[in-house]
Length: 418
Ligand code: EPZ
Image 1 (cartoon, rainbow, N blue to C red):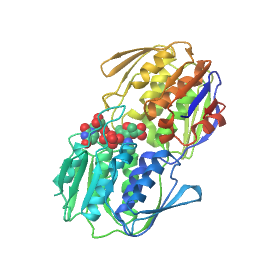
Image 2: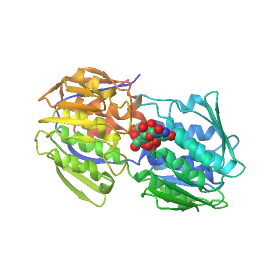
Image 3: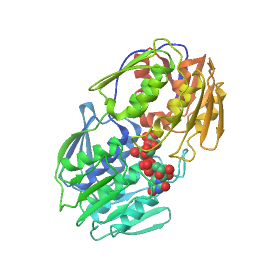
Image 4: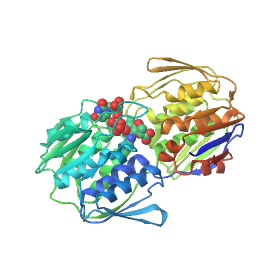
């Protein structure tokens, strides 16, 4: 099992190219199921979750051709089965995103329940409730969601809780439904907007994405098209924190500063100098130690839960005391015990971690538990005395493209142990 070894102490200084967003590529790949004409999707990150999605689509009879630069041509003209098996879904919860498209185009779908993961139970009850409101018969048995609908009909759905993939699933289900669907209390993430733009590129009629009310006018059929996935705002934030935690300078290129305003605000509060351009962000800490910053996660445009672990690492070595509150997931502090093993002074009180910054962390063998926790441990390793070895980094490979190469380019002393 691969591990990452990080020698602490290097101050990062350089430029990093940001990859396409995992959490936009996954729903857009699933949305290709909605049309019988081929689509071409560009700027797709080369990640484990993407290859898992391609394998899942392949088992249904979808043909995916990888062109140079990870441009994917996806052809769902000959779908042979509407089935997402447990052995694949359990490795990637986002597989649930095939449910809406399969039901919307083919009228039936058998999709394994994703099951929980390290950060929480991750139920999909809101996805199912929305599909039922659109006229689907949904039975949950033997660990599978078995859904049927001669043709979904438009509905006015008020989501009880903001859910990103729930919003995406229902939006995709609605594009071929009979009539108008209104999704209220919809997620406003940039990845939701990207999916809506892709859907409209292939002939859907989606409006309001990015606000909390999305309106979808059902159409009879969709056509082909080409679309480039937006840059990954969480990868951007992660590398900026890498610059901040080491007191260095990092310029992220091929990204969108407007997608991470909440994160940039907190980095400024931590004492970082931030400059932005149309497609780049530059952070310069000028050798200073970061100041502690309080964090409270929330759905977009609030502070992203996917950046919480990275800011726990930053606060672990910051000047002062910080309160980090996780409001989105019920168990997203698996990184805390690992950071404590590196000398971090953190006290968990319910959903809040109270972090007393220390001058130095010490290297230790640590274990990744989920995608963003593992990123936080790598960041801590960049400043810990000695060599930190992070185990189970298949988690990190799911969401970060070539993380060690990118950190090496910035001057990080990191290598993969196979
Ligand atoms: C998406 O997960 C992202 N994944 C997550 O990123 C991200 O952390 C999360 O949104 C929040 O921003 C993808 O986009 C593939 P939710 P998702 O539904 O959609 C509860 C990463 O690191 N809920 O917005 O699964 C749920 O338990 C991953 O890239 C229900 O109760 O998250 C949670 O407490 C990790 N019932 C809250 O809503 C439901 O039916 C928000 O979850 C659905 C969700």
